[in-house]
Length: 261
Image (tube, rainbow, N blue to C red):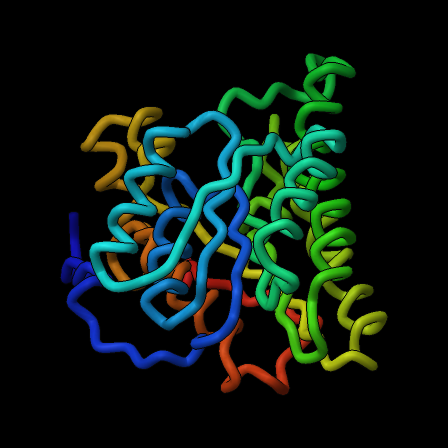
């Protein structure tokens, strides 16, 4: 891969900017969500590691965080299922009285998305059900537990502004996230709760790697002005900034993290 490799987050010096705060990260068992959970824990937050099906990965993440001196626990819920969302927050309330930081990371990827003509109601509903509807009502419930000065951070996608055929349902679901972000920022401003979205470019996760050859991955990396595919830690670092006090004056923004692409 062209360009200098990214140092693992575990080698970086960070301070405890999120001490005494609790963060809920949805879809945290793998990929970008895993990197976000790890980084927020290293910044001092107690992290609720939500997962839908990746139980082993979520459990191993908690072990990693605890071995590094952090605090985390797992909570299973498919956030596209509103009954499971209700159960999730019942369990969270039994353990803590606050969620200071919400990271809406769970989402269906763009792989295998059909064109307009081939999109079925089932495909549309499953895409919007997780990426938009689930995110909407998880946020609604989390904000009930969020003290003044909290943080809502959602993961969108550079596809939200794409013209690529076959991505209309996926891109629309991600564009909805960005619209939610702008409106919620105004609604929650009286409570000093900031609401922002991170808009990644192509990120080197297992979902991406499973869909392309090493040669194709290298090709896509070479098209990025900074010379490589994004890494999950690149996105996690932006989320950590938005979660901390240094980002207190930033709200209603969609922050692109794409290496210039």
